[in-house]
Image (tube, rainbow, N blue to C red; front, side, top):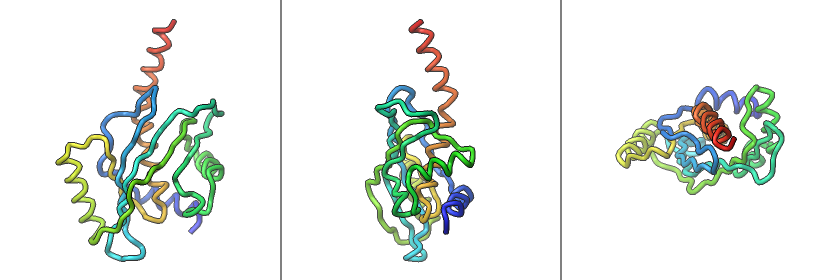
Length: 176
């Protein structure tokens, strides 16, 4: 399956069952913890559970517009591609990520016995019982998990944009 097919599959199959309630931080790094669930291709009937976080950070250098940095997404290994190809791929589809650094840090990867539906209900209930308003729960195809995580991150960015603009304008107004 090529990168185009994986992208289309991720767009079609990604579901965000539980999302971070707060928007992204405007002037500092934001940690976006997540639990990604996908059906196991190797152990049919079982579920792959990836736990990790995306760190959305401002770069140390000023980057050109629409030149985000993606680290820890394993594009080379799983998608046979690199960050430059992914940026171009997304741009050609009219998708742009802010020129920030996006680092994916996987804290655990495990196989859970049982169906995706069973695992998603259990983890969603756990998040609700803990009143966890920070961790996202994302379902998607295991072979294109990177795109599902990027879709989740992009949805949070677009949700945060109006408030970010207000805060930036307010900051400039207070300085002037």
